[in-house]
Structure formats: structure tokens, C-alpha cells
Length: 547
Image (cartoon, rainbow, N blue to C red):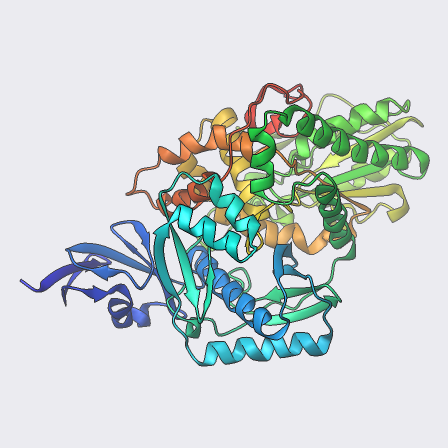
């Protein structure tokens, strides 16, 4: 028989054996907001070039989904690499995310005019709808190929792979290795922009799933950009710019120094912040915010200790205690409570208490009863004297509306984020959001008993909250503290990998688990033996000083 049965959305369809997933997808384009760019077969990720020879269950993804968006990004990067090779005659390096885009570094100096030429070339490649083909070859052959063209970072990262064979993608005469899936042709990549930053860098932007599938306007965040650059320079000094260089250090058995060096740098940066706070006598309130799994708890506790070393007496005040009564909490479209909304907080009472404290008055703060869902008055009072200072950590801490009654000179705002600059190789970056997700999976399992599937399932809502309530206010910060640790992926691997393997292939989070496993398989494991008890990573793996 030449026919096969294809199950899609619980309906059965008949196709000829040998039909590609691309051909099948054309029958269901009307179900999606944009072009289908990726598929799955029996719950497993599958590129549209996949040939279907058996009865299967299929699903599809456009670039408004997180899965499709990553495929779109990888295809766009491949097109960019090809265009830069032709126009700039130079290598590029995909660095890190920056304001809804990706910062790209060029070895050769560029101008706005030369960048415009790259953009035109990319548009030409897209218009020709050139095929992107996948070639399965022996890993050793791939290593030798990359060595022969002088691409040692790809050769070195493949050195630590356990796979016998690897996939090389081809566009025109360019072969590249990607740790993600790609579209079947360049015609799927329709929207993108290039923004010139300096003579060695620009930002690649493309449709974002958090902005209604449109390219958001680029805003240059100078403080954040400089923090990335500072950390990148430090990584270059210690000669760990990518995973293969980290693996090389681990394989030689001298990772202890790397751990202690990384911890010392982070502690010094936080101690410098404590010194600035102490030196400015106007500061009475320190506000700390950052996206999920940035290490806010550990950072705030360590900052309290550092401030105590200057003779100050920090007092923590929880924004969560100022939630409005449950019945007054705003709701989402699905009817569930929106606890992340600023309107879920009794801002008026919060500001009155802060103002009274700064005026020298004794205050009985609120205490939220999470069992009854009601706000209560604490039986413990607070009063600030000359040496006391408030530490407030929360989702909205950088938003001026949260503390609208307090003079700006009395506040010091700290933005935390693990600014990952470590890459897999020149064309494969490690997303900051992936770093944070791995942290959260480990922590949720350790402290809350959640399995990895639950954490992954909730992650999209967490990210939406960050996009709405955290990232828009990062420029309000007086200082940015990078909470990433150069060695942490190797540590997280040992905790998270087993949790990801436990996810069944029938689970909706399975494809995301496979993607994270494909990332972690490139990293050598690192023992926790030398990690200090006050390390931020302890917040996620346990065994730390701060509970």
C-alpha cells in the first residue's frame, strides 16, 4: 500500500507514502497566524523536510510560537552569515540578546553603508527562496572540515560531543553547524532589521512573539550594553569565550580556580555597590529587581551583610505583604488572578508607610495572609534611625509608580540579570532566558517539589510577566549587576539533565526538554565541591548559607 494515515488535531488524513512534512503542512496553513516553519512527528521535533513513510501524528508551528521563533532565528542567522561572508568578506560572531534583538560583532570594521549592503544581500537571498539542506556526516569528518577552513571554535565544541554523526546545514556553498533546527528554505524568513551600533557591532532584529509578531523598535540601553561589554572583556582575559574553552578548562582538572575567580569578581561588584550606597547619605531605600531566577534573594541577603560591614542596619520590607485582598486582585482574560500586575499591590498604603518611615515615624507594616487571602496589620513595628536602611526586592521595584511618594534622591535601584556572554561557538549563542530557565528548573525541583515539565509549562507566563513589568524599566536602575557565573552551566547540567530526561514524549513540554538537553550535552559536568555556600548558584541547587 502506498497510502499512510496522518493524524492532525485528532482528525485523520490520507497521504501518499513519502510525502514531506512541508507538503502536508500546506493543507493546514489556515490554522496559523503566519507561515508554518516547523513540525513535530509523534511528539518529536521534525523539520519540514522530513519524509513521512508511516502512520503518524503530526503538529505544526509558525513563528508566533516559541518553537517556530527559534527556527526562524536560526534560519535568519544562517542568512546573515552568508551575506556577511559575501559582502564584508569577514567572520561575524553572534554574541547575546540586547533589547529584543541579537548583538553581532564583526572582525572587520563596518559603516552604516556597508551594513546596508549586508541587509540588501540578505533580502536578495530571501527573495530567491534558496534551499537550506541538511547533511548528516561523521563527527570526525566535520571536525576535520572545520579545522581545514580555520574554524576552530566549531571544531573544538564538536570535540566534546558524544554523537557519532552531526548535521551540517548548507546554504549555497556555505556549510554551518547549528544546535537548533532550521527552515527548509530562505523564503520563510521575511521580516528582519539591522541596526548599526559601532564600527564592530550591530543588532539583528526580527519578529518577537511577545510583540504581536512584529519587529519592536530598538532602544539602546547603554548601561546594560556596557555591562555586557565589561563581562565579555573579562571572559576574553581568562580565555573562556565559549563552551569548548570552558570544557577544555574542566577537562584539565583545574576548575577550582575558575570557580573562586568567578565568585570573587561577583562579590567585588556587589561590594562596590554597597560602598556607593554607604557613601550617599541620602539613600534610605534600596530597590532590587530583575527577571526570574536572577538571584534576587541571594543578592539582597549578601548586600545586607556588606552594608552591615559599613555599620548600617538593613531592614527588609516585602512588597508581597502589600497585596490587596484576594477579591480585589485583578484578573487575566482566562479568569485567573493576575498577581504580577502592579494593581495587585496596595500602592497607596505601601507609599504611605515608606513616607512615614522616612519621616522618622514608627510604622506597623502590612502582613498578607496567603491562607485567607486578606491583608492584615503586622504586630511588629519598624522605625528607621540614621543607620537603618530599607531593602525592597520585587518584580516592580524599578517602576517609579511603586514608590511614587518617595523622592528619587532617597532611592537606589539595582537591576539584576545573568548576562550570559558564553556561547557554544561563533554562530550559536546561549540565550539568557535558557540560563534562567535551567536555574528555575533546578530550584523548583529542589525547593518546591515541581518536576521539570511543570516549570517548563509555566515558563511562558513568567516570560510574559517579565516583558511587561521588568524589562521596560531596566533603564531606571542606578546600577546593573551581572549575576551570571562563567562555570554555572556545567553545574546546572548535573542537576537538570536527569529532570529533563524524566519528561515523557507525550508531555507538551517534551520538545522544549529535548532542546535543552541538546544544549546541555555540549557541556562537561562540573562538581559542586568548590562552590562557596554564599554563591548565587546555591540559591538554585541548594546547600547555601541563605535559606
